[in-house]
Length: 242
View 1: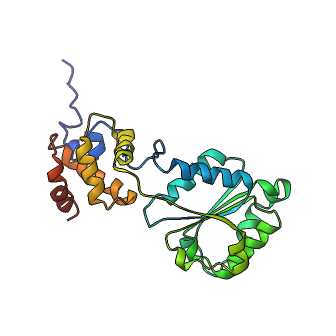
View 2: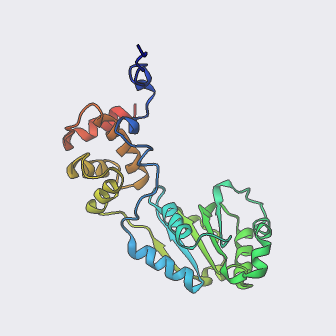
View 3: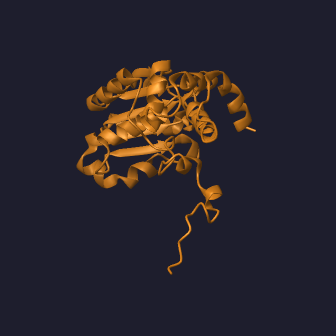
């Protein structure tokens, strides 16, 4: 008689499962990119600016979705070394921007007008480096420069660089309806009611980063309670953050 194999749960692996596996997802639905929802007009404006070859500033509070906009740019224009992405938080303030340029020297020589330079958290980049960026833009070493910041008042832009900024765009907060669509793209229509999702969005101060984190907390609670009500959201989130 063949020995019957025990399931993973019978072997005690249930506790080792991630919450999303318990809900039959292969990976965390809030840790992957889904269809871009909301701020479509802003995204169209960004795409137009890139095609036109401009310096633009995109601003919004921390967690508002600036980085997601940059991911959409990479998705549309990426490949063949055309995009250089730099997060200002990861740079030494005295790092010479030429270091970045030299890494793509071959591309700059062959197709100097095709490089898209994406600078996130640009308030951390020194004025000296910002001036170098202006120089490379003026010399057609880069086609477009996108400056992302959550603190526009701290940008180190010289008067001449300010004159070269074609447009400043702000990432706006999603409507309640759009927030629901963001979650539906990740979870489908079976989990969580629209009212619950809207309540989570409200408790997240309509900040997308907090919203995604809080949706995870709610989904973990959903494992044990498939009938979560909107008036329970606040208490669930408070317990989940302890």
